[in-house]
Amino acid sequence: MEVTAEAVVVSTGEVVTNPILMQGKIKWYDAVKGYGFIHTEDGKDVFVHRTGIKDAQFGLDKDQEVQFEIKESDRGPVAFDVEVI
Image 1 (cartoon, rainbow, N blue to C red):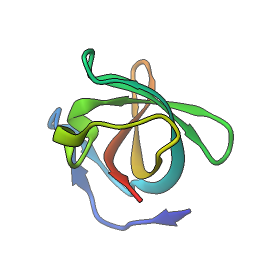
Image 2 (image 1 turned 180 degrees about the horizontal axis):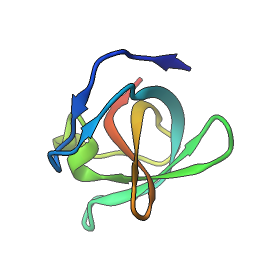
Image 3 (image 1 turned 90 degrees about the horizontal axis):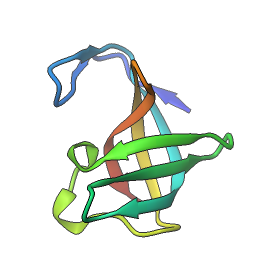
């Protein structure tokens, strides 16, 4: 894992400091509903919303490998800056 030193302002306006760059595969993603889950390298599932995808017009497909950053929400971890690799 790589740690970046800059603060990031996510789409909700929340400032996230020291985001962690992670990798995983799309477990499932529903383009109509605009959300799904990423299965991380360490075996956890992370929620992803269409607003967290860098090229949201393309959506995501099952088993696609992605790179992303994570933030904590009141419901658990959320992926943002999701990018297909």
